[in-house]
Image: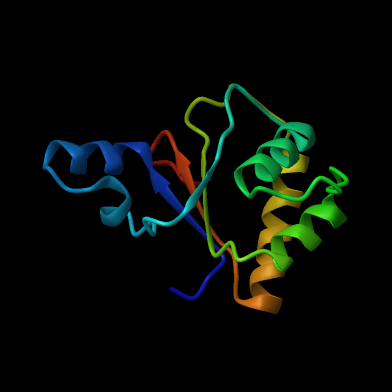
Length: 124
């Protein structure tokens, strides 16, 4: 896999659970992927706080995009997942900045890769 961001649907994961297949493996999500916990609201604050917690960022983490870049690229994190199926309120601009951060880090360092789980088959 040679790209930074992949999209998978909740439907494809559920279908393969029914078939007895391991969901992450079937969806090509590495088992060692770290889940970024997001609930109903996705914005800069929740993304950065959740990423810091999931990635065990140091206490000096400044909760801004530059600090996230530094901590992410200095870490040994290779794979991340972000499940958007419960999100009801999304700041699209913040989400796009986060995706750009991941893409830029991947281009420069070859990591991390991010799997985004969406609710429907409509990935547009």
